[in-house]
Length: 205
Image (cartoon, rainbow, N blue to C red; front, top):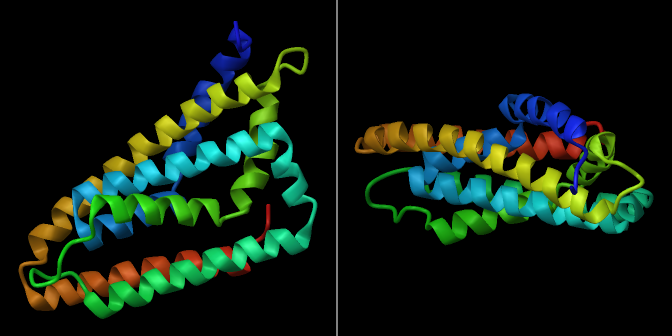
C-alpha cells in the first residue's frame, strides 16, 4: 500500500478542514464566479488544483525545497504573481460584469487559476511543511506526495468550485443591470487586488 492507513485517516479530516478554510484560492474562485459565471469558476478551481499538483510534484522531487531555500528565486516568482493579479484586477475593473461584455471563457479561467497558483511560491512552502507530516520515510516519497496532493487538490476543487458556482449564479443573474454589473466588476477587482497585496506583503510561511 502506498500510504500508511493510519496516516491516511489522519490526513483526510486535516485536508478537509484546510480546504474549508477561507483562503486565497477560495477568494480567487469567488472573484472569477462574479466576473464570468459558474463555468469559468469551475475552470478556475480546476486550474488551481492543477497548479497545486505541480507544486506537490516539484516538492516531492526536491525542487520545491531548492526554490524555498533561495530567496531571490522565491521573490521573482512572487512578484510575477503579484503583477498578474493586478493585471486581472485592472482588466476586470475596465470591463466590469455586464451583458454587452463577453464572459470569461473556461479555458482562460483555467489558465488564470493555474498561473496564479504557480506564481504563488507560498504554496511550495505549505506543501513542504504540511504533506511530510503524513508520509512514511521508509516508503517511496513521490507516490505518497502524489496521492496526498491529489486528495487535497480534489477537495480544494470541490469546495472552491462550489463557492465559485454559487457566486457565478448570483452574479450573472444580477449582471442584467449595467449599474450592478459595474459594482460586481469592482468587487471582483478588489478581490484580485486584495490577493495581490496578500501575496506581496504577507508572511512567507
